[in-house]
Image (tube, rainbow, N blue to C red; front, side, top):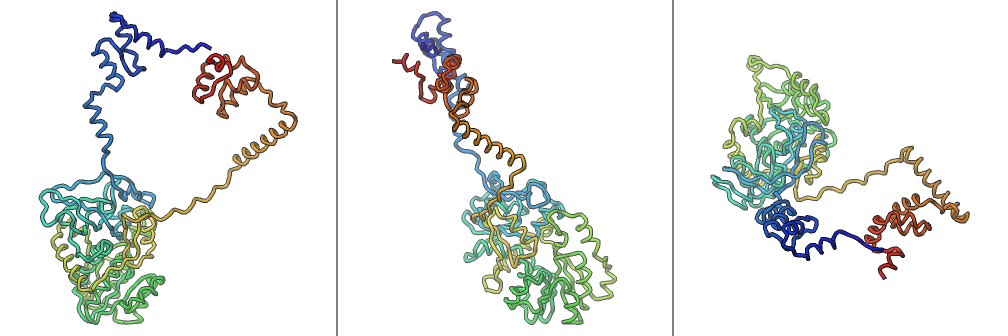
Length: 514
């Protein structure tokens, strides 16, 4: 068989170096050869540039450098849209850089708060635009410092309260929201103590000025803020605590010995009345809705009611406008005249508004210093319910949503995610079952045909070629097996190419080569 390809022709042309400009151009222009021999040097350079996409050596070097150093990325918990847990995803985001007045923190632990659940639903005032990185609380080490930063340096151990963006491997935070932590404090404890104990301290000592002999009714006593209020209240002598929570938490909370009366939330008003007909001095309400009216009704004269949350609006996985409206419209409107007549006080506290909208950063900083002082003295210890990997954040949020945590839930970027359960095999559809049955029948027919002497093996050349192609055999070899040499010769180029590719040769090619 005589092989005729274009490559030898080009080579012969290149070797014949005639002075004709036409021949020079012919030597240079074939781009598929990837090189040019002889001829005009400028034309050869042009051909090479055309082969490389028209890029100069400097441009190619820059492109290679850019290719080797892709933009640095980090993992982050991103809210892609308001609603259910499916909108909370772990995504790759560009690493931030500290701006003037900011520090860049390598996050070691993040705090999970009920406010994060409300953000996911879009049930807070002025919700962020999505997609956005979630989280208000994190602890870690400073990795870089921006311009005009004083009092912080690389390597400092800190805890921060940024407005969003805390649940990521790196976060840039203005220094007015960053606080040094004691050397002995772990990052998980730092993420568990700051926001919860900050709220509790302000409620106990600044808003109600808790004194000896007073009594407190505390909702959600098993949560992170609830546990912080209990510990801080115990620093004041002879204080009686009525803790309200679900029955499933009573045994664990009784073991702490810090709560005088644990009451189930289903009928807590009557239970309190059975213990004391007078009522209580202070009501701490993080629920809102009807609990506002019930709590106000339990106050003694000179009593104080404080609202610091509205978790009753979170009734399902997604936002319910009905729940939000009901939570607020169920609250009775109390006039100052009624407060004057009954000798009662109403108060409220919103840390997010105080810190980010009302410029209370200096007041908050001085309070954080007091909390760390109490921690050093051993008077308070954060209660960590459990720690979770970033990839398991939806499960952690679900646990808080179901009110099953006792203490703080913490996210740890260094933790490995939980192994996912194996997906159960799906049952076959009727169509799949029918196809499987048909395929089984075809195999049985083939077996019977082989037993009958292989009469069905004589197939036409075209069908044999198709079958050979399907089974990965060469077209020419398949035709030879079926005794149909004409079919193979009509397909010289495909058969030769296939043989060359697979390293095999037909009998005729072997003879010619020898």
